[in-house]
Image 1: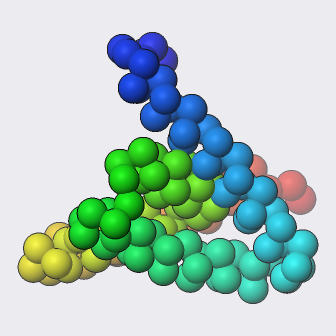
Image 2: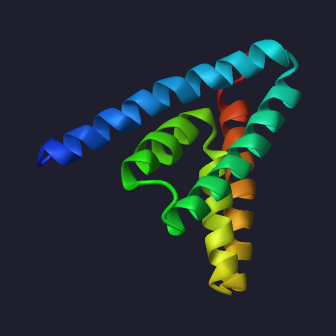
Length: 127
């Protein structure tokens, strides 16, 4: 791992770590409130996607400073749910009118992840 080059990179790194700790704790907390895996994962993905777009839009409008981005989007939401990053990337492609790339991105992420999970399950399942 490459070491941070200056104090601002170290500060960003620490903001991501702190946000990540809170995001992981938030995800764990929701799994305790909504014990069924389907509902807790679905709730986290939907909430994380909403928050990512809201925060990103606020950043573009200058309502949130750049350090807040490292803490909230990269740190908190990155640990809370990676689905938020998937949603943000998808919305960016949609906004840029890159429809073919958007379809490929969604298809490869969803189907590629499911295929990899299925292959791992078949390779490593116990009888």
